[in-house]
Length: 134
Image (cartoon, rainbow, N blue to C red; front, side, top):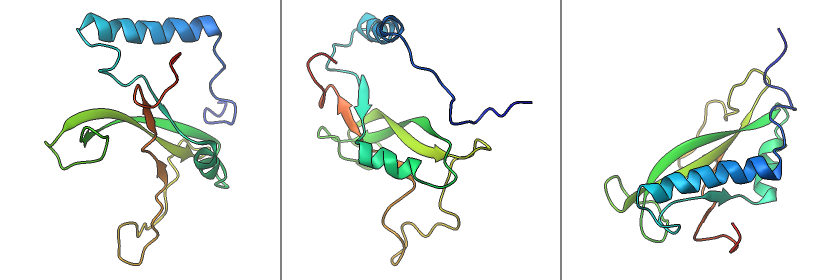
């Protein structure tokens, strides 16, 4: 059986396919009464952050996790039940076996542990941070 998790998974979509998919998403949100400023359309991540994930020696690709987090009006994390539950995406490096690459025996969060994690998050959400054409 051919390997599923390779460096070539996915494909580039045509402009028509891209527009069709994003329009279907937008139309569904508008149909339930939301305005274009009421829902997250995308999230931006900088190239240097993405390169850091890709530079892991075992990385063959990136996995996008759909997630939700409680946030205040400025997009800052809050405790559960405070603010609004907002959709977010998280990016992780993936190895050839299809497993998320994590720091083994992680000490993240401990007093003397590393401050950087292994999941990229807190991208800039659109509509707050996007060009007029997005």
